[in-house]
Length: 389
Image (cartoon, rainbow, N blue to C red; front, side):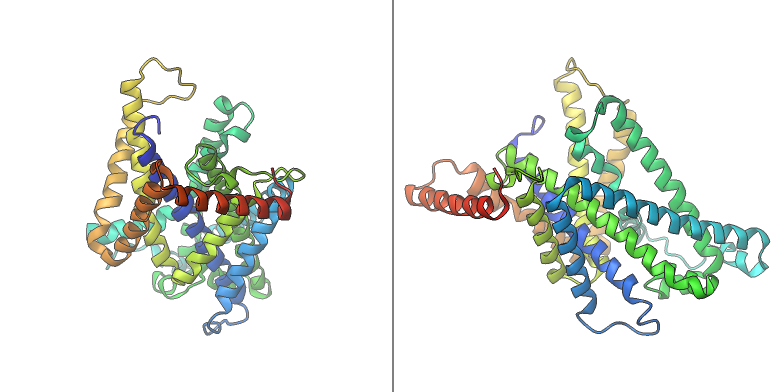
């Protein structure tokens, strides 16, 4: 908003709050359903509608937890993060043993590893979407700065530690998986970790779907937690409905914002059941929003050079990053035009919303009255149901 004004700021908020975060919750919830059902349907797909129902149940459960208590939500996050890391370390440990002491066949996947792979730059960019999606939590800490103690010190430290740790663990996990699973098997399996466990963990293989489910639960919880704060800040700045600024007097949680996040996640589940299509929908808008934020950094450095900046980096790194963001927005248009079109349409839906509800100040009297009555009804319902104020 400081760099480009209220409209680009609203579009950025729309992309993150209405598109990226809820859609990511949907993707994670579908992944939860796929893995939790795999032991019951090892050789076939589950009945239609069952994964979607489980995904909805997870979204509703995480929404309820984030409405009830910040402390419970934080505990859920910590507990399931530990479970996720344990599962990944288990895979890494198994892969290391196989690679160092196992048969030569366990090293075959690393021979000619790029054989028969596409060198088409546009399709590689689409592959980047799925790869980068695994790291999409890298910027979530920025949305809860107000709840951090000593953010000048702790925010860069938390970002550096979390990104480094995730990168190392994810890379080692992929190396371990390739040790025990061929590229062909990996492409065919919808649940790679379960396939790995079935091959090497024997009677304990049933634990792997549970660990992966724990991982997705923690991710969904973290997404809903941070997304609701984003809605809250947007409403506080006058770019979202006022009701989203309301906080429960007892639990101190932004219940309306949490509920909206959960409802949008369920709506995206209705839009598509294909995880990769959902990823492609959001990634073009996501990286466009990130590019806009980086461009704002350059603008503010030039227009406000003397403003104190507690956290400051050399402009070389943002320039390199911005180039990558632009490539991730432009190139995939050729490889996935349909998914790109859906993402752009979702993005453009922000324009009429902004013009009607934010920019249009001199509305006819009857429109103002209807809007006021609707806001009063909405506020009254939330205040009575959830004791907010």
